Amino acid sequence: MRIIIFGSTGSIGQQLVAQALESGYSVTAFVRNAEKLKAIQNKNLQLSQGDVLNYFSVLEAVKGHDAVLCSLGAGRKGIVRSKGTENIINSMKQSGIRRLICQSTLGAGDSIGNLNFFWKQIMFRWVLKEALVDHELQEQHVMSSHLDWTIVRPGAFINGNATANFHHGFDSTDKSIKLKISRADVAFFMLKQLQTNTYLRKTPGLSY
Image (tube, rainbow, N blue to C red; front, side, top):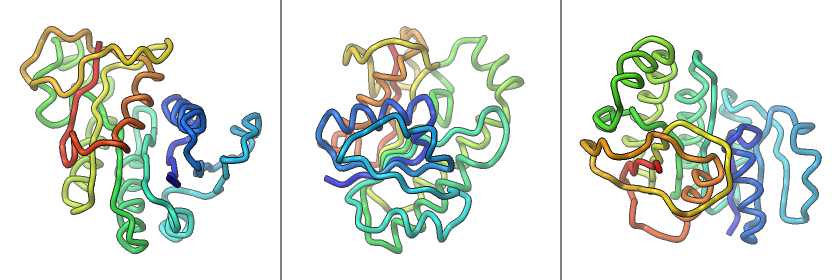
């Protein structure tokens, strides 16, 4: 399977690239700065340099792939996630590509019900307010795309190895989760979605 990864130099994206190569995928990493992945030497890795906010750059990159994984980041502010994802979706439609795995965040949509007071009232109401708005718009683009999408909503990122031992697809009222997940496990779960339709057009949460 040929896959292309957007956001491939971010903390989740780097895990996606590494684990996808370990699993034998043919991987294209879409990057603004190719130098950030120059240390990875693998015959199954191809770098595509461009700007996700440039539609034609994205369109040229996605051609010939079987699936797209999106883990775009933009810090606390900006429209990179939403606008970039919109360009990815339109490019996929133009190129006849159906499968999209998109990383969002726990707290978007109905998963706001999973959050505790700190995350709901302090982090997403004040500190990360603009980032959440960007994720919400990103999700709207994905849900209305008519593609074969899965939106993954992870908790707060922590360091650690892939354990495959986490909760996923829990109810939006579940307060028992820890609201954190390793970057490696996020990538592990996203890649697993390429082999299953369990969460087709669904928004599974992800947390320890």
